[in-house]
Length: 95
Image (tube, rainbow, N blue to C red; front, side, top):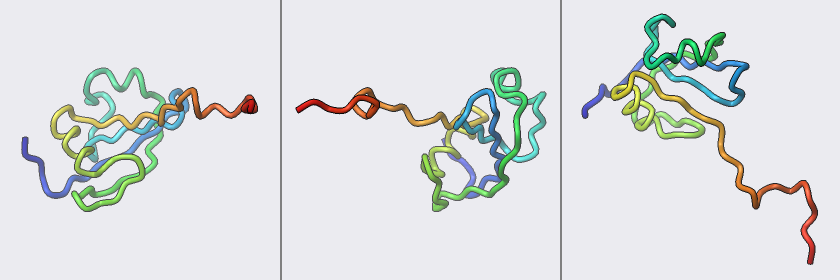
């Protein structure tokens, strides 16, 4: 699948799903969001508008992946990183 060299997107967050971000084409009204995302993500707060390019640095994903998923599915959902059980430091390690 081909996608444009640049894509205008809006990024949303919601208090219902902390550290989860929804990337959508800029200007898409909530009642036109794909796959019932409006029900899952509302109330949504727009946090950023930007024009993505393949070279654009992003914190968690490559811009190319975000653009590919938006072109394919109509959105990109960035979930919070999963913590592994070995990274739980609530208990001191025994020697």
